[in-house]
Length: 234
Ligand code: AP5
Image 1 (cartoon, helix red, strand yellow):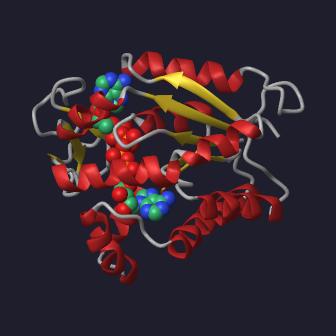
Image 2 (cartoon, helix red, strand yellow):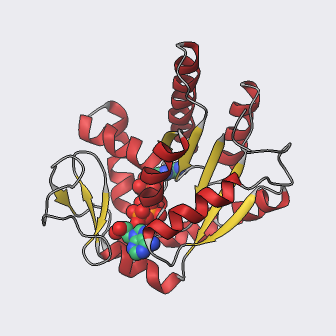
């Protein structure tokens, strides 16, 4: 299965991805997390993209696509090693038409295709409040919210005990820039996937666990675009 999570910043893609990936047995491909890891590790890529992320702008398509291809190769290696890595869960990718085309090409070269696209729908006025209250674990990236989903012990990650901090690009200016870019460049992709019969909207303005259950039910439902049965099982 190759499942894409779409939705504006703050809709809950990262929150859902961390629950869905283990539940569906998929390899998470979260481009934002990959960029943040590169920044933390001080790699040449990290140094190149750090200022771009801080401004809330998009990283160049070629850089982003190369990173995703590396993760797809990892799936192939895991399968060769006999692991039951069935596919990928995309969070924050693709964001431009060019990235969507590149993903189609990369999967086609591997004899695969995008199987489902879930749009997490949240009213725009809720997004800024969610992002202003967002906190993340500096070690493992687990996502929290000061009001809707606080860690059990303030400032300490429930999952790994790491420090829970505010993301440096959650400033009001960068948040607004990211939302503007989403509506200009990424939202048009919804039509691209809808026309191919792959898009399913899910109401994201509900408790986190209910959204997760709905997404699982949606992708387990046979789709007209799929050949039948559970669409992610190849
Ligand atoms: P990325 O890390 O992907 O950030 P983003 O796109 O800004 O998305 P967010 O992480 O802000 O939102 P989310 O939908 O994941 O929400 P979350 O689950 O955290 O990318 C960062 C940067 O990297 C980009 O700006 C860009 O520079 C670069 N980049 C990444 N991908 C790229 C690409 N493909 N091409 C080019 N550049 C790229 O939830 C938000 C908050 O809401 C949390 O506090 C959470 O606890 C809370 N919440 C979630 N669900 C609920 C719920 N149901 N009810 C109440 N609260 C909830």
